[in-house]
Amino acid sequence: MRLSKEEKSILESVEKGEWKSIQGVKENIKKYKVYSKATFRKDKRVNIRISEKDLIGLQKKAIADGLPYQTLISSVLHKFLSGRLVEKKS
Image (cartoon, rainbow, N blue to C red; front, side, top):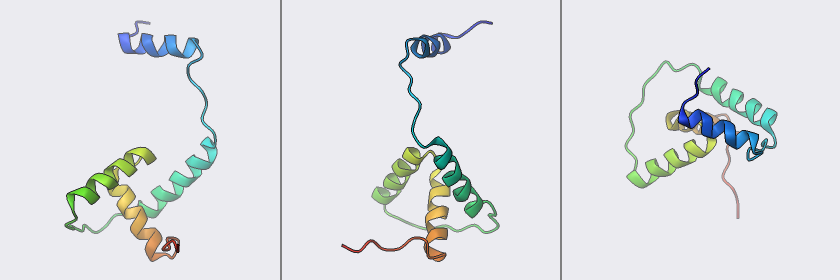
């Protein structure tokens, strides 16, 4: 089997022990399954205008969470409407 340069680099890195397992993989998988179920049925389209700063923030947060930003927006709205997202009191 032939490996690309990138694949060889990854293999060498793994063999050197540079890769570590992350904590809570199973919990994260469960969490993202809930997110996907909450946004699975998409039968309506909505267009909104938001500030560029907010959109960039959403996109960064979505990348950090490993989600498409539209899915993150849909999930946040769903949580808010279902009462699972509440304002944090200071």
